[in-house]
Structures are given as structure tokens and as C-alpha cells.
Amino acid sequence: MTDTIKVIDLFAGPGGLGEGFSAFRTSSGKHPFKIVASVEKEASAHKTLTLRAFYRQFLGRKTPAEYYEYLRGNPKVSAEQFFSEKFPKEWAAAKQETLGGPKALGSEDHNEIFAAIEKQLTGHKGKKIVIGGPPCQAYSLVGRARNKGIKGYVAEEDHRHFLYKEYLKVLDLVQPDIFVMENVKGILTAKVNGESIFEKIREDLACPSRALESDSKEVEYELLPFAHPLENHNLYGNYQNKDFVIRAEEFGIPQARHRVILLGVRKDLMRKNMTGELLAPWRTEHQVTTGQVLSDLPSLRSGISRTKPNDYQTWKQNFEKGFLKVHPELAFSQAAQQKSEKAYYSASEVLNQGGRFVATKSRHKSCMPEKLEEWFADEHLAGFVNHEARNHMAEDLHRYLYASCFAAANDGVSPRSRDYPESLAPAHKNWKSGNFTDRFKVQAKDRVASTVTSHISKDGHYFIHYDPAQCRSLTVREAARIQTFPDNYFFEGNRTEQYVQVGNAVPPLLAHRIATVVSELLEA
Image 1: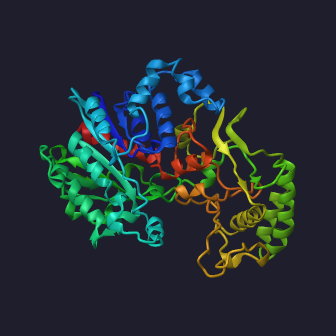
Image 2 (image 1 turned 90 degrees about the vertical axis):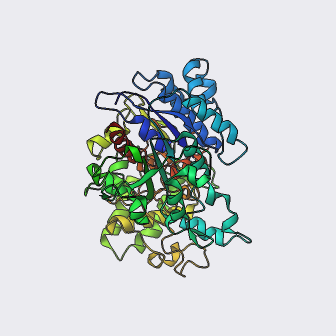
Image 3 (image 1 turned 120 degrees about the vertical axis):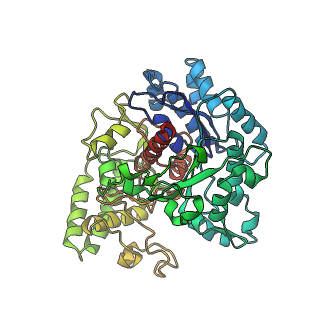
């Protein structure tokens, strides 16, 4: 396969799914997938997307030193200011790829988006694919629970339930050879007017033009799962909804991320007697743990909210205060006490909170599998971006210390609310009710991480670092590592926006494995 495969990336976020496809190389070293249009409405994610689109202009040739200078540089200077004069051609191409600014499907941007897509495909005789997934807030279990608490909320009137129809409209316009659609697992049980949303989506995706009652040529698709044995060229109806779930940790991704991902293949491209599991080559029993994937990142300390000076000495004094409170409470476990003592002496190392860029003279020794380390590493970066620990309330840091020591001594199991002593109980009326049993959760060193979600932007309580001596929640870079973003992938926006981008993304390494499957299908 030598021809360019044009890619339309919808609801792109910061570009996780697109990164997996654009990073894919053939055995001859070529990058067949070229993203020609990325649609994203959120401003900070769009900036991230455009910066990465600029980086992609140099695939197959040397990345300019200026790219690394920007990542290490002054945050007051925008990427456009920094690159547009020095690399006008490449920056213009990046902006064209991301449609010149944030754009929203299903809005007044419709005509502009569709015109841009049509322009990119005019005269293209090669293969073309569509990737992406409609926003998941209306489908996720957490989102649905939140919606129930909104006075006057009516699911049938929530436009987010029907954004998949915008995806359908693009399919009808592009008529791709293959499409990939991703969403949260909660979509499997979501209903509107008593009807399963996912069943309706599957029915509509099988023939988008028919579903839309458009005048376009009818193109029919087989809907296939990636992580379930194929059933000899069966139609979409022969698979159960649950068959479309991918459990990312089973394929070398260091988190328990379970997502619905559909593969749509144009019927005339289907090979006869397709059997087996498409992602089978990457299925593994040796799951990648949090400790492995974070092992070479610089140690940091948290800051303390509403405290001045917010420096190391203030942090250490609070840590010592926490130790004096926590250590006796760990008396039930000699191992836990030993962990707290080790953390106490380790905390004598002067740590900072990190920042936009944390320089390193040499990388710490990594515990990752070699190929995974190669995926992350960029020797020209000489440090880590987006690696800044946030501030936490002083009392919460004591709970973090207790929780991380508890987990380190109990095979990675985080303490439940009943396990906390009264001296560490937060001032929540329902703390002992059972509703907050796992409000504080440690991402255990020797276990696969929990699903990184956008909620990590709120308080970090569910994403406590396993190292008691650091006593903090995960940084954006650590969350990005768990999501398998390469280390030279820079997230724009403020820190809260960066967390949201990372949490909402598709793991790029999983997307890369999917891209390999798509490449093989298009080659056949």
C-alpha cells in the first residue's frame, strides 16, 4: 500500500485517535494515513490539535529545534506567534488541517466544516477513512446520574444524544472505505423513548444514506468488533452489543479503560471467511502497571492551597505534621508503618512542583517494556512537558499520605472510608454512609491504573500517586503517560483544560494498534 489514505477526524479532542493513525508506519517506513481535516470545538483542545498538526508536517524528516524550544519556552508566547513566521508553510498547513479554528458539528459551523472536508477530498482517488466519537457526557453512567439530578432534564431533548447523526452526515458525505467510531461503555445501556441508543446507532451506521433519507448513493457497511472473534462475514445484527467493548489493559495499555469501538468496513471491501480477533496480535497477559509507565518521571511534591509561602519548607512541615498524625494510625500494619517511615526519610529530598517543562540531565531508569519506552521517548526533548503538581488542601495531603502508605502495604488496595481513623475523616456528612467509600484512591504501583477521565481535573482525589514521599495527585504528564501520549505531545491551555483533554482522549497507542488493523484491511 503506497497511496495516501486521507483521514477525517471528528470530535477530535486533543487528537488521541488521530495520533495513532498518523504515527503508523508501513514496513517500508512510510506514513500512509494523512489527516486532512480535524474537527474540534473546544478552544484549548483545538490549540493542542493544531500544534500537533504542525509537528506532523515533519513526519519523515527531522523535527526542527524550534519545536522543542517552544515546548520548553515562554508560555506567554502562543504557538501561532512562535511558528507562523519561521515556518509559514507548515503552520498554514496545520491550521488548514484543523479548519482554521474551533468548529462544532451540529452548529452554525456545519456548512464551513462540510465545505472544508469536500475541498480536501476533491480529486482524491485513493482510500479515505473517517474516525472519531461523539461526546460521551450524555451516555456515560456518571453523566446520566448527573443528568437525573438536573431539574427539568429530558433525555429526548438533550442534543448530545443525537450528535452521532452528525457523524452519520459526514459518513454520507465522505462515503469512506472504513470508519472507526468510539464511545463510552455506558452507551450500551443508554435509552431514549425506551429505545436502545446503541441499537439505533448500529442500525443507522449500516447504511448512513438510508438512515438519513438522503439522495446520496447507498453505501452499506459491515460493523465489526475489534476484540471479539469475527463470525465469518456476518451482518451487524449477529453481534451482541457487548462484543464491541475493548478492554484497553488487555492490549498493552496501562489503564483499565473499557470503551465501545466500532469498525465499519464497506461491504465490497470485506474479505470472505474473515475469522479471528482483529486485535489478537496485541492481546497480552502481562499488563503494564502504573509503576512501570511512570517509573522514569521526575519526582515532585504538591503545593498547599491557600498557603504562603507555598514552598518546599512549608510543604515539608505539613508532611511532618501529617506523618505524626498518620504513623500511629497505621499501627494495625507493621508494613504500612514501615512505608510511612520510608516516606518520611525520603521526603528530606528537596522537591519542587515541576512546571510547563521539567529539564532532566539524564532519564531515570525505566521499568517499561522496551517497545513502550520507544513509543514515549524523544531524545531531543531533554525533559518532560506538562509535568506540574497542583496544590491541595493541607488536610487532604495527610489523607493522601495515609492512603498511599496503606495501599503500598496492602497489595495496592486503597483504603475505604471505614479504614480511615476519625482524625483523618473529611467533613462530609455522608462520609460513613457508604457513598464515599472510595473517594480517595491510590493509583497503585504494581497494578493497572484506573480509567483516566476528565474528572481528574476536579480534585485529584481519585488519582493519588503511589509514592507516599511525593504525597500528591497525578500531573497532566503522568495522566498522559497512562493514556499513552508520546512525551513530546504538548497540551495547550491552563492545567484544568489540559487534564480534561487528556481524560477525554482515546489512548494513542491503542489507536495505533487499530490503525494497523485498518491498514491491513485496506491492503487486502
